[in-house]
Image (cartoon, rainbow, N blue to C red; front, side, top):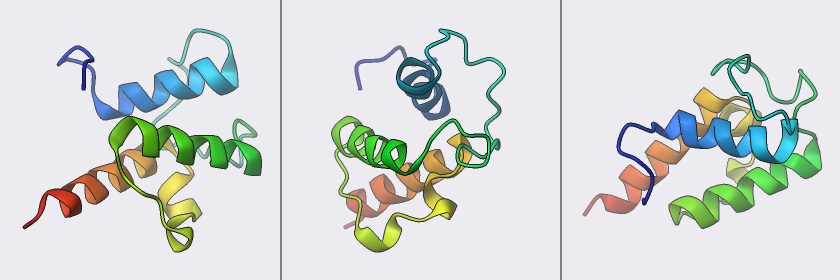
Length: 92
């Protein structure tokens, strides 16, 4: 990752959501546990955009059965999903 070391995974995800869904430039009001679907920030098409972002940015493959709210419905859930997938890929 070429981002500054101080930028967390949650920060990267939040910035992507702000840039591609909120268009406000300010994600400070977007909480890590806020439901992206229930709050109307992301719809079904937006989830597909998040999948593309995750696959391209973190080099992981999202399986169809992983495309569920427990993995994609908040910044915290998405960050946890990415961490688990990258850890699994790094395991021997």
